[in-house]
Image 1 (cartoon, rainbow, N blue to C red):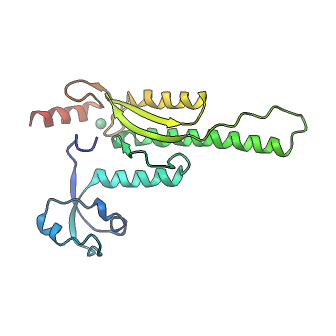
Image 2 (image 1 turned 45 degrees about the horizontal axis):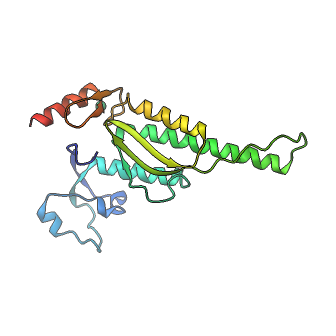
Image 3 (image 1 turned 90 degrees about the vertical axis):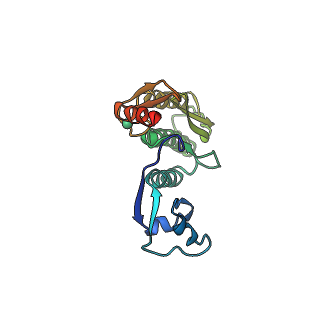
Length: 197
Ligand SMILES: [Zn+2]
């Protein structure tokens, strides 16, 4: 996704959050770049140019790794999707993990005490992400583990993305022409404009 769209850039002041992400600092300003010390400390309150999308991406990635450490347990190539689909991934991961956790909890409690001699529910193999990307305008969520219910959750999330603008999250649809994308009217118009430029 990144690289296909023109990133919005904004001038802003280095804050503590960005200080923790020096690799995010993007600038075409040669003067600024020459003053950048990768191993040193970036001067505070220096005006720099960063991509809003990159900051949003980093925040989202950190949120996902913190909230779902078992799902994002190994390198998977990052979230190769637009921010409009972040909410879909967030909901999907929440549903997957709470389903696995509640099943585990139920199993454990039956193992501790099972006076009615109920059958133990099968343990679900923890879901771990292999790859998350956009392909042919659709969301692809590749993973290991899980069961049929989780397959259903993933299918539902992918269907949801097929009707959601990948840029902003509003209702969207598949757009042909060049790279197939799922976009709302506004972002499709923007893309058309960019393609003509
Ligand atoms: Zn949109």
